[in-house]
Amino acid sequence: MENKNDILNIGGHEFTSRFILGSGKYDPELIDAAVKHAGAQIITLALRRVNSFNGNILEHIPEGVTLLPNTSGARNAEEAVKIARLARELGCGSFIKIEVIHDSKYLLPDNYETAKACELLAKDGFIPLPYMYPDLNAARDMVNAGAAAIMPLAAPIGTNRGLATREFIRILIEEIDLPIIVDAGIGKPSQACEAMEMGAAAIMANTAIATAGNVIQMAEAFGNAVKAGRMAYLAGTGRVLDKASASSPLTGFLSE
Image (cartoon, rainbow, N blue to C red; front, side, top):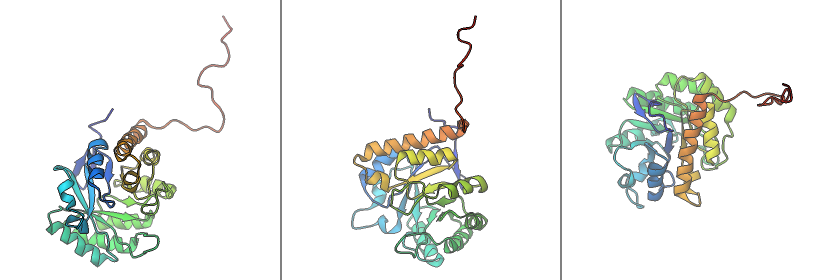
């Protein structure tokens, strides 16, 4: 059962869905499935996708869905700011996912330049959501710089390897007083569920759904997994014991 009172607040904006679609692997079917079957209310887009030779992605994003343009392609804070301002001029709104990556092999984000971009964009009226390698000190810098949420990677982009940085994400959830949105690397609904059980505020997925044999079924599976994980987190997961503990009495059943 979905709890309509369980609101995700990002920069003063409220959402009832905790599944976010990354649209890097652009496909109208993927977008449609994520909205209809996973309940996505936020969809990312790269600026180069707004008017690309493959079609205008904005034509396929339903009205009412919040756009989260990213600064994909930025190699430093200055380039990220330029891309963000272009996105706003194109009518994409004030939300911005900050991606600063100059490592072409592993595609790991540059936390230092990301924090710089976050401060500049927050001062310019944006609602910045920095994509970062999960590091507590860097996350604190981004909070101080004006981030509206923190988006740590679970594993390198597009790998579907799951929660490789699980323990570092757990630290961020415990120590950072902002929504922690797990982004990149989630490959299965079960992994999304685990992240939500840990206390993540939301999950972003793209490759896991886009490369599935059945996009619609996988989108629905992710949507359900995110809801189940959130429900388990709110309920409080059961205790873990080192020794067996019977759930029913093992003695006394013959006594009068």
